[in-house]
Length: 90
Image (tube, rainbow, N blue to C red; front, side, top):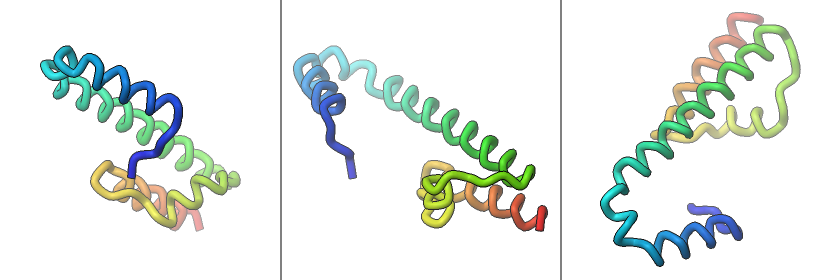
């Protein structure tokens, strides 16, 4: 499900208005978004792993993500690695 909001609505408007310009760069644009997503997941995983390894509390939103990780974007693999770290520290 795509979240809606003013920023996304504006982006949709701009893309639809200039669709011919975007058409030739769609692959690079999507791969760029995926690269950003991968980097954010990597940094989040490292932050949570550090907190767990040092017996620190993690945020409620991080707990919720670990309970219901995403599929197909590395979320499940990340959650498994994080939970494994927690089990090692018990």
